[in-house]
Length: 469
Image (cartoon, rainbow, N blue to C red):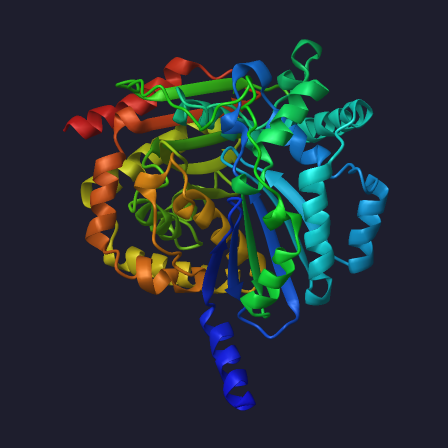
């Protein structure tokens, strides 16, 4: 009997079984069996609030609050919290996106109870003092300065402002202008956000471990996460109940934004097209496209590096959010090569639209994708983060997403066979024809050289003329 149980446990670990549990107070738990026998667990706590829930009255509050939740509770000071994590030897951090906030830990399973206890404490009992806010504001400003010195980041911020314009995803997660004296967040506003958004019904706990789900359910049964009773809390005046969009039509022509940055050594370019939102199955097609174009044998590296030697790196990227998404090429080069790079990219996309990708490109891209996915499975954080986001966005009983609800999560390790293997070359080429159009084109540039808008427009107009032929 014991041998059969052991064999079942090993089979479940190999299959990566995903199980979920919901509680009376609205808290949700997702557990997946680890793919290894290591006594390591990955724990991600998702809160359904990101910068897209902010309004003009109080931008930057979501990221600011994420920082403050490391700075002490009514039970422990920040030093005591950090000592707890150091004693356990954990990997502990957090991040804020436009759609959600996530706190994560990787630790030995023997420390799981302590981690859950600390998570419960900071989500329920953080003090958010004025002194701590003033101190952490300085840290955040330094973080923003570091990002400002990264000109790829600046180009991406500009690109996002065009792709997501007319929606709450248009604005950066944080920005120095949010921290100016007249717009600074006060403690009252911060506490209102904390009390409203950091409630059990707004959270999803995602775990990957080699312990059975009963191990975690017993632990959560003792936790305030599941015992805490929901109380009626009024949404802060400075918050949106859900990300918003004005549904204003995009321009008929190309959207271009240029920033002159004297400290930029190279010119930073993001060249792309608006595509689909995160609920569209076509998003999987665009992910395959990134693998077709990337790699050392892909068109981007061949055209911009091997054939011309005018760039060092160039990558295709795709992203989808609530209302739309994009497919883009990210690269940097000496300013003198700008028009040449733009011509190469417009010609490349024109060729993709007219002739499509070849069978060889498609097969290499799928093979590359398989290898990349297999390597990602090495880190249990990959599955934990994936499961938490999937449940938060697609499966929670949320009035804003009922029409997008999924019945289950396709395990990360099965996505290739269940989703991507069915996608054909014809579907990829049809998507290129459908979305790589002039009215979807977006270009952002950051450079120390004074680039003329008219020069960029002339190149993009070549694409317009090519499309009309």
